[in-house]
Length: 466
Image 1 (tube, rainbow, N blue to C red):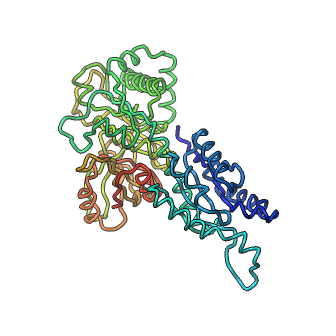
Image 2: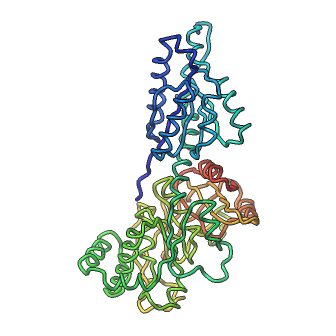
Image 3: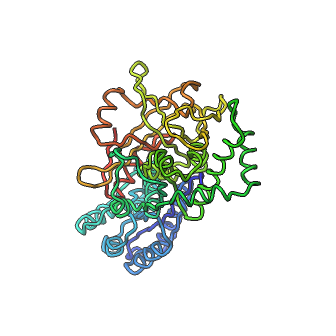
């Protein structure tokens, strides 16, 4: 589940029907469309149903894109085409539309020929099409630039990533084990609003079902998991076999349920587990290993963060659940930490991942929970919070910065790292809270704020970039 995917794109290449009187032009524009496919191929699987120059051809092409489940339609005016051949199909399609305002000619010089301008005059066709789509109330986006320019391609890629991720969110399924932590209102969610605005469905998982699965887990598979843990992780002295087995059985049970129910992530609340008394231990080890396998996770029953983590996994390939814990004014950074959950594959490569008994002791369980403890690898990073605003609309709050080169601190005894935002820490933290971000976030390496903004735009919800 941790591998990134390519967007499924339908390329709608347009041309004026009158230009069929120039027999060399359509083959020339077909060649250009093929060049566009090559430049888009690193991040998109592109389908080109030929050059379209009539309304009927456009209608058929767009219907084919819809039937094939494309993530995005990219419209290119290969040369000029009148807007009315594309308006009806683009106005009614549910697929997002990106107009790629590009051409093959990088410059106009004294040597530029009249034929070259005929091959490269889609620009005013873009203006024609944009006008009629605006008048029709149809949302669309435009990227302008030469098709071989790196910045232009990066912007097109960002829209492709956003459209692909929105397609994922429209069918995402998050499991809720137990209930959200009482009194933590910032991630309180109207499940109907969540489904209607973002597409994420919340599916309740009974703890008795998890407990029954854990109890019935095949011993040979549990033994294999435990052997692999001892190979990969550095075990704290004094961990008993029954403690390790209880955490391993819970991990096996959760993985089976996620697979069988088609869930993309889950949220669990430690107090609910203790109060209901169905589970032998807490899913700290399970959550860290499942995060590493590409599932979303949210602590304290936070399904919004589980969805945000799953979203970042879909977009980037790997993500983490996190929380701002303590301010480091001297280092212009924040210590990031939670109870015992974290994607261990993001751990520093120069230090071992420690398998420990939970040192918090806040929750009485039949078997002491185990967890993985580590600090994260330094690098550029993005934090995303998915919360609800005053009007009941879902909202992203996103920021960029870096994971600081910071060692593992044994006394913290859980996943932790320091995040330094771009700019001043105090100003950042003030604005982050004033934008209504929740206190749980999704984390991913790289700078992805622009793509998150595009996801919000395609979903029709707000996004604040802090």
